[in-house]
Length: 311
Image (cartoon, rainbow, N blue to C red; front, side, top):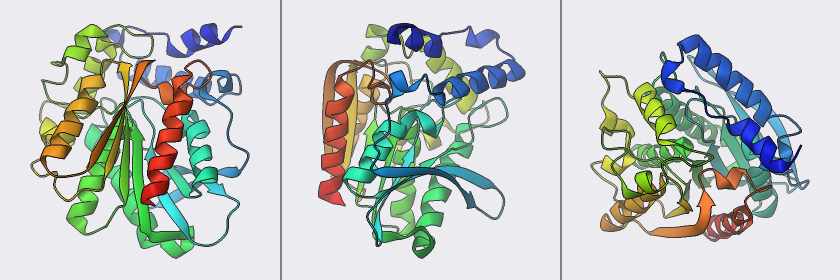
């Protein structure tokens, strides 16, 4: 099977609007098994051997959150990068092994990727946002157990995970937890009714890795009618001052490209340092597909350099 056929198998687009809750759960479970399979490595890339990869648990008072931990061979307290995978209503930390293991080995740092609750009819986006923030806070508060330096911490995320990471950075500032940096890769930053009202949405409405239909279904699940969409839309945050320097990575052939660009503008207006790194011709989720998207390597190099400078 060619790599393109594997990609199509992983990204086959069903009619989300016709799915029941049970159908959605079954579909995402199937997709996540594919993403975690050995065959998927042809698309998602092979991990850096300079880092070990293990599942662990963050035990909170009311729930347990699985995390995928990437550790280099370097000893001693290391910087921490809390990462959140993309997908929103599907996805798994395993799909990000290539980039995260490289970051762990090359920075070096401990990278912890959050296997947050996935959005569905019973789980709004606010639950996933809480998971990202609680993992970050817990690990920093238990830094000796995790063997990390609590003064050298960054957050990173992709797509919906970028939204979670951005909101974690805001919560960290409000809680007095000083972060060194934030990295947002093709982030979704607007879950209000205006989420699709960006030029890039219509220029790239039907791409192989993201469509407007999928985005609209995600938005409906993420923000129930009774919820405040602005509260989970970092682009509409009341205060973006005092946040850690940001690197926002934008693939240009992505419906969400203008989300990232707009967030950079808002951060800069607030006085928060923000770099915009555009990758011409790359599509959504490209960092998780180095096997078929060559721009992923350049983006990984940018992210590694940015985090090294700040951590």
